[in-house]
Image (spheres, rainbow, N blue to C red):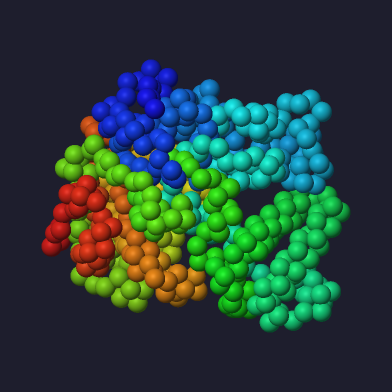
Amino acid sequence: MRFTDDNSGRPLRPIQREILDWAGENWNSKGHLFIGAGVGAGKSAILRTMQLKAGGNLVTSQNLLIDQYKSDYPALNDLKGGAHYPCAEYGVKCDVGSARYSCKGGVDSCCQYQNNREAFVQGTPTILNLMSFYLNSARFKLRPGLMYLDEAHSIPSLIRTITSTSIKFGSLEKGVLNKLKYQKSDLVSEIKLCQFLRAKMDRLNVLMSKEKDPDKLDSYYRQIENTDYALQGYESQPEQYSIQFIDGALKVFPLKAPRKFMDRIIGEGGILTSATLLPHDMRELSGKDKYTFRDFGTPIPAANRQLVHVPMPFGFSFHEIQPLGIAEKIMDLYKKNPVPTVVHCTYGMSLRLREHLFDPRIIWHTKEDKGEAVAKFKNEGGILMACGLSEGLDLKGELCRQQIIVQLSFPNISDAFVAKRRALADGSEWYLGETFKTLAQALGRSTRGEDDYSTTYILDSRFPNTFHSWKKLGIISKDFESAVVFGKGR
């Protein structure tokens, strides 16, 4: 197959043409095509070019990416979840209006959600988030056609999240148990857990049918949705789930993404791209040990995207880490180079650093006002204390010239899922790979093109040993390795 362009008026760059030529040559290969393409490759133009030629739908895990695609390609039909569209007729969110009032788009047929969804159902090439695609394709019995998945590395973890559930035994759950004549301990049984989840959904549907308060309606709908996802996944592959009581709640979670969900989303073939596609991701996505993959790297020179290790003189376990020393290092690096700076850290670390950082140029945020903080940083510069922003953030050019990564993000081994997942045959590769992905994604938030540049500093003293473990497992690419600079402090 021969690809031309994305109809944007912008010429394809050499790396984009190289990727498209490779995809065209392998188009008839059985299974999925996995494309490793780093920051600066222009994955959106690549996938849009393929879509224009071959049809099909674009799927991403992030609504932010949907907005970016829509900005670049206004003619592209887009579809998010119903929670992102207001229902003018009933004064609730569209998905709640559909479930509670059987709303089909309003009397005036001007419902944006309904119109965009209808276009997708009729076969109009669309960009959707993952759950919008799953729900609508399942609801209308659509078979997965040709799919293009952007940021594909994040899809397995997202599916695992939505097919898990935490059952806290409040009055509703206790009432369901009494009706079934079960004890909480009975729910470790596969049959009894499924019966409990179905009965819980029935009870929630009754409550939702009687409720008038919009906020409570929304709460009931979310609980039904979460319970249904968990039930669907667990029924299809119960052997892949872990069930245990933690702090009085029953945690039900899959060790790997259930195939029923994965197959509905990516089907038997498709194009999957990411800057950080690792072997365990591709096995989980495709369900196979063999797949067609090529890593094209990034066209950005290593000197323009350096990752400099500035080790702190203490350990980075919770009890060893010294927030005061980290705060002083952040301000030292900023004073030496007072350019727009992003500091990547967890919400917990952000709270600890806040006790030692008082500069008015620092922008703090919570989960609720994250978007406002990013907008302020783009307008004013300064220092953005970025929590949960290692992906989906585009800070090209003067928007960001410096990043500081406080610590490596290892999965929490005290978490029951992490402990069980790590115990599988590929557990070590998965554990270290997840840590690498978070770092690599954060690294790509600033230098966004071949002529762009920034420097990223990492403070974690564990970085050299972890780097060598990555290298031994074959996790890191030559492009990543070429950008790393090990130092003795700065």
